[in-house]
Length: 312
Image (cartoon, rainbow, N blue to C red; front, top):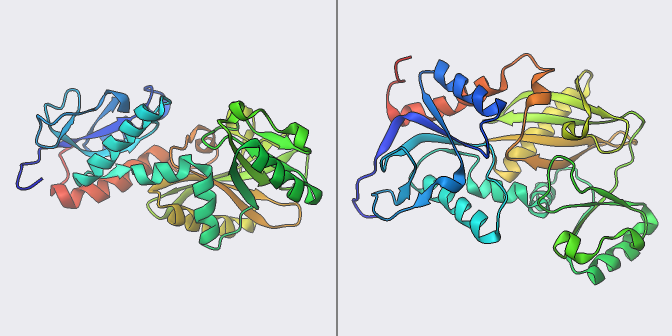
């Protein structure tokens, strides 16, 4: 880049999302209370453009860059489209713009196999997991592992409980084209129930903002699938906090929703780290305002770069 000038629109935070949903609106209000303007935009609408000093063209910014970026979603698309969008996030980070979460963190979390690898390498408790390509390799895993109990097939890039399938036999495997020929298989964790419970812990900037128990009649306990949110009470809160913070650090996220499942034998096992988590269910059972906490944490990060806080 040499000595090319960099333009920064200091007062503006960029919120990237597919739509201006309630959580985007909450973030805009939270930043406004701190004296920062916040604009909503689709990541797909930001371009690489070598005419600008930064090499990035953001609609309405006239070649300038935001003070910070919050990524709520990056939208589905072709491999080429998603790669380009992640490239934009990588580029913003290279321009020293705080991006939450970074492209690197999103890549690690969207790919469940990488998340599991990093959690396991950090020595944290997680169910046995196998990610392979081809039906033949998946069958080999099942022949070896099913005698010890069922496994759960998960979409490698799925979220909100979509596409989960309990595998009791080789005949339960879907056709390769249904899963893009990638089979992510995880040991099913037996739990007490019904009702069945697991935990979502929300971390931000190295702290736990809140946690909830997700309660459902079936073994899939996502809020998007109809599970009820309940407060977490009991002695396990400290262990949940420690696990969630360790998992967030292992994956390298600035904020995250960490999913933890209580096994019937008393163990707490890490399942996933979500780099673009929703918090509607959690907000209903915790006293802190999640959007306010995210905004305050990012403001604390960008103020040393920008000098004094903008006037409210």
